[in-house]
Length: 435
Image (cartoon, rainbow, N blue to C red; front, side):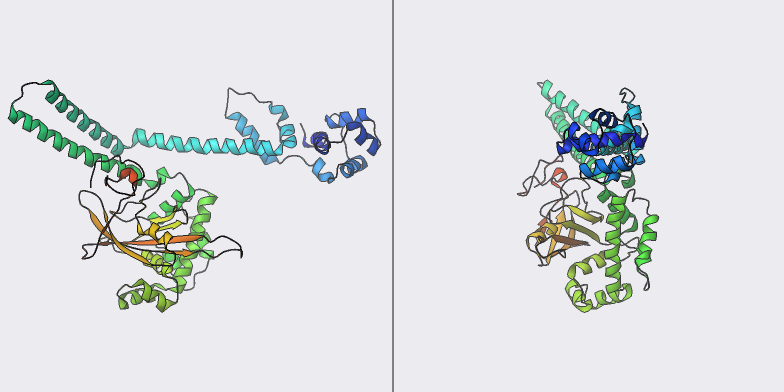
């Protein structure tokens, strides 16, 4: 139906919304109720003075009655209908539907796009489960080990008189297989958490940002130049492969603007010199440059490192504890999904705003590793005087070989942490027990 023929439907909707009787409206504009009924059912065209009079009586603008639904919305509804072969909507009335119920039409179109996005995510996950050779090999190893343990246990349970030597051998085999199963399961979970190819597993804007930061190692040489401006950021985002939609690009833009501000306040060469002169003391570096301690932690994480150097990790979270920026570090896994370990100094900092926290932590595993974590929570600038305070916590992660002080035993997340006796545990671990 042409857009101009939908004016009558809008007139009727507006009249009903105001509670005006058809006869009263017809009398007010000088037409018969029968003629107005034909107009409202799109059987008579309308324009000129009559349209103006009707708009006046209905307390609206003539354009609100005469303009049709946007073509983009109509096209979106047609695309949504085409995706379901077993449903036969009235396509010949799609423009009328969009014109009369623009809000519902927008909802249908939005839901159709959401369904399409979710289908792509499911396809990606399904394809990975089907074709990922590392995942298939890991699952096969886990199943083989479980089968071996089950067979050995069956022999021990069903055999009444078994030679002590053979019994000892079976038990030793079970213990070795159990250890291998624990290691395989831990490796499999770590692989699923980190992803062999994070770009294939990106499912949100924050995930896209993490992939972008991971590829760059949170070091952007384009923004280290002395005369660079924010215009360079736009050029960088145009070439950023992991940033697939506007939401991800907006997050990346805010992150890069902050990065540029840090680089301007602490030029790379001067920052390195300051670190060396202060013994890498972030507080003294912050005093020297006149910047916040959180900016120094971010700047330290942005320093380029050689291939054989471990580098530094970085985690930023908002007041709810949700991780908004992550730069991973070998041996210190950062969960991609779900909550991280509540014992991290990052979250302790949220409870003590503006108070720097430095702790040496130990990550679990067959070869536990030590890390120095320095964290700080600061309020973000408020837009208005009565706005509630919003805090943001930043944590710098650096590997250490040993320490003479106390060590805080943490994990990546409860789901894959073997520390069964941890007082902060939220849910059972799928790994083996470790005190």
